[in-house]
Image (cartoon, rainbow, N blue to C red; front, side):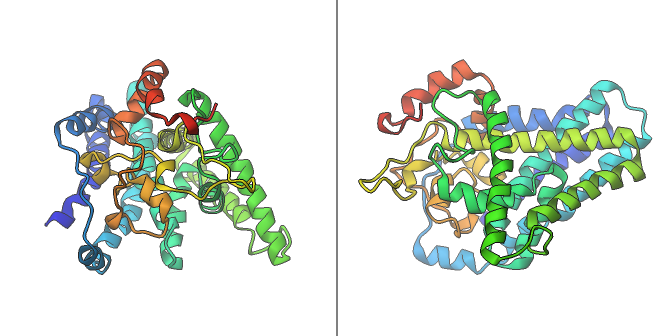
Length: 347
């Protein structure tokens, strides 16, 4: 039964569905649940630093339920997107309802879309990577697959990494620097991959080109099938989704820096180069994303067997709570700056 705890990740799309159905002020139930209720629950529930034993790890890796809990997000996310498109194009909504639906669906795109896509994007099976890329489509962030897997994991906790926030950089500045630099980096990586394959730009191997075509096609299809209001909604919800991702990126590596060796190269990524959180509610809802230190230490590890490392810098709160704190830079700096190891500060 304990394995079913990850069903809690579906509570966010469930609340979103209820908001879409009931409308009125209920459309704001998802932001309230995600950034008020969950943070409160994180303060109530105890921290769990326990790791699985070797025999337990082997057992959990054989249970397909953990994979299917990820796969189910694809029909759930796209069903909600379609339902919301029908709603905004056929129902006379007040402005506050329209905006509430944007934020609610955007949160689903970030948590059950991009976050799950991140996990599946690290898998070796082609079909799992395909599902991951599909989940990135509604948030217009398909380039994330290339930059994250071929860029971020190589350059994490260095100034070369767009997704590593500098010491004293506020989250609002980070949204722009990270989003822009990651997209540019994705193209640089793609062109390098094409060069290594001796392939041309217009090639079946230019994944980023095809991602662009799919995303443009997605936008055109919405405009043609649902109209301009739905198009505006889809674009704004996608933006909310990837801004949510960038807020997570902000707290995951804030102020941390890999030191250089005598050869001038950066030391290998260690457990100390990502912020870790053992607050159980955030762990469950985000499919253990909060044990980010172990994920970077061994990115091929599946979410259900990620470990807590004592040498990892520990966040005083869970990821959802930390995201709220990040929105208030003076408070964030006051709490987090003293926790950043002095030798690792990125000025």
